[in-house]
Length: 386
Ligand SMILES: *Cc1c(COP(=O)(O)O)cnc(C)c1O
Image 1 (cartoon, rainbow, N blue to C red):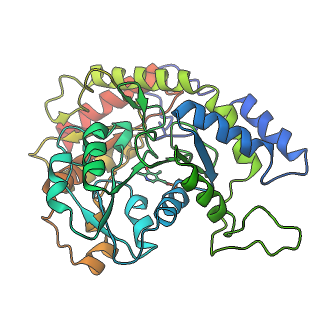
Image 2 (image 1 turned 90 degrees about the vertical axis):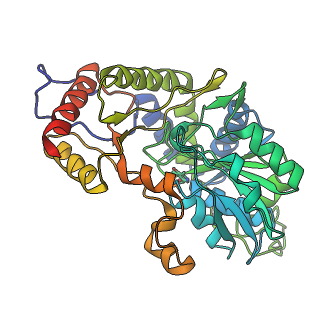
């Protein structure tokens, strides 16, 4: 447990987003280690069943990372070099990298100012004869406009892949993130709502896609034939170990409490920073929308520059408060500039956000005293740093 020492002025560091690991989690992993089946066993089947039931899809395929899951979606949907996928530049690089693995071209569309999710109204103008799919990202747990995106995908005859890696538990109108698209991808990296160490799951209602992904995650091998001639296509080694699956089952069993606790922490920050004019706080979700908070990110107002933001983050760290700067827009990464010729200025909303975001410490066991200390330190730093 993280017992905060008396007095919030204590010099203990407040970390950014450590995972919550309970004794039950440890027991579940150790139980697997006492067996001889460390891969492709009962924990994998159990984890897949529980995730499918939680998200509300027919199938779930466990893989060794969210990125692997996105890659399997691209492969299983048959996307090929030169095809285009419409996606958001305001995301973790994995959502676009998964396209590059197959030579698929990411066609970026800028995001909405409020939720930093892809602007559905700008998508149709980006569709070309080569467009094969739309790949929205539920950034920070804020669900993208799935009803509108589904409608566009259906009408234009393109696939819909949901990057729900930051949004396990988020929902719109009672339907969970991941359950809207042809396939959805979850991640269980240690800073996510729940973790398996490394890991991911693809969820889908499509039995054909599910079967294809099961094959592809295991070298492209069909159900093992006795003679060993079972490799039917070129696949990958993307399996998730039993230890990770068991940890996932144990973590998922507390999911309701996790979503509730994270909402409380977000509300405490929202209140603690409400009157801070220099900050733009996360928007309130629409009625019927549930945000399962991945991180809590504030944006500095327009009068601050990226250099101001960096100085504030450095000063916060110097005072023992870990902060993050995500996301830097994908199209401005050196690789993407080099490959696609981006120079900055193409996606103004993403770029303005990327320059001014500050992710604050956010984890299940953060104490009220730690939240207060983060708020106080941020206020003080804002008035002195710029
Ligand atoms: C975490 C994350 C992923 C997947 O990351 P892995 O480390 O490969 O599990 C993909 N997309 C987004 C937006 C993410 O935040």
